[in-house]
Image 1 (cartoon, one colour):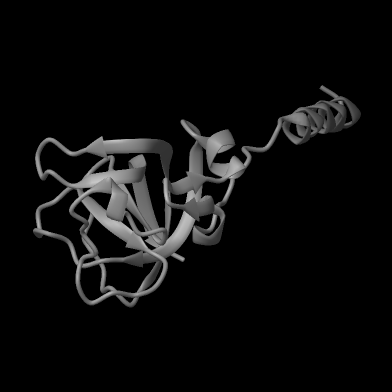
Image 2 (cartoon, one colour):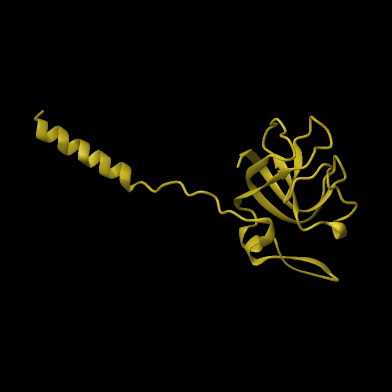
Length: 147
C-alpha cells in the first residue's frame, strides 16, 4: 500500500465521521414557559409544553427535600425550598414545581444546589398510587446532574 493510498483512505474515513449527524441536545424548557395562563378554571399549559409532551426535555431547578430518603422521585422547584411543596389536589398545583420520577435511584442533593434534569415530559392530572401525590406535570425516566 502506497502512502498516498493510506492518506486517501484516512481522508475518506474522516469525511464519513464528519458527515454523521451529531446527537442533538434535548430541548430545554424553563419554569416560566410551562403555563400560558391562569384563570378560574386553573392553569393552562403553554404551547411549548403541548408540543414537547412525551418528548425528552431538559429543565433546571432545585430539588425540594424528598418525602423519604429511599424515594425514586422528587419535586423540582424553580427556587430553593426548605420544605417539600406537596399539594392536596391538582387544583392547588403551584406553577413553579414539577415532579421528577428517576429512571434509577440517585443520591439526593442539598435543596440550594441548582441541578439540570433530563426526562420524558408528561402532562395532565395524575395521582401517584404509592404516595397519593397529585401532579399536573411530570418527568419520567429522568436523570439529573449539577447545572
